Length: 415
Image (cartoon, rainbow, N blue to C red; front, side, top):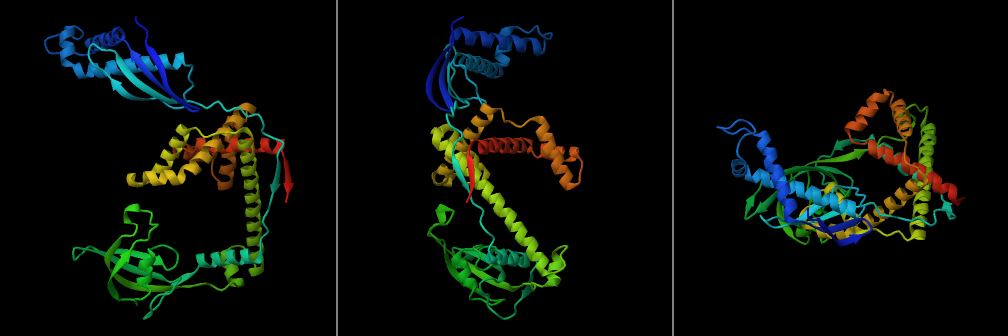
């Protein structure tokens, strides 16, 4: 049979594109196989199974035979491209620009992502500063205030307009062409950015039970580009205003939080938590510095195809509407590029040093989670498997091993 031709049309470090031409005789052979397959499988009125004439089969199942033929030549063409170019794909290939006409060769383009060949010439010999931020009295006070706020009650205020920090229950109805649309209820805390600034400003002038009809302007940096700088007329009603009643920071409060004899013991525990958080943040800083040093020392680039893939994942994760896609991509491209470089560096080190998580290490991590939660190993395993989080846990173990290796190759100094 005539050979399939494969021509490379584009490539970067992480993708390849080819134009594949499957000659007529191979297309005809695939079509004959499709007709024969349908001839064996189907039973038509007036014929025994497998005995219907092939012309009848072709006429009756023409579209299905065409689809079968296309799938066969695509598979055959892709296998030829994969073998000829010695490809190691990391995802299934995508096919585009398919041309299939009777009596003509089948032509199509195939695009596939491949594992970039990243060579790391230097992964150590760096000097990294580990900085643990001290827990200040102000940081401790702020954390205690957050705990108090989590336990605070909200008490109604009668006959007073709200001030910043108050919670309000409101209803907002859009007015279009002089007609008031159904009102939408909201509960917001003034000053926390939970509503448009222009709307909050109007709320501040209303007492419970009062209403107003007003123009609300969307800010120029509103997330929805189509609304930036636009105005909308609304009917606004304030139904309720509440103030936050913080519990006093005393021994009684400390005992209500947990196993603390007095407020002094609570402060000691909270400060210890903050200190542990500072240690974790310092360790995260070491990881970031080490990885940045490796990326910079080896000139690791972010292949455009992988950056586009990362951006596509972000779009879906954040449910970004189509009209905002271009602006979103421009804003998040640096983040995507940094993420791609990070993954390439980590993957290359893990592969070179054989640091990928083992099954035993995965089981050990799951057992530790189960022990912490006081449940059986199989229960945690089933939860992780159902939530498709086993791969995530495995990646975490691999990253831990990679960073331990990187730390052993450099000097870590306490700042």
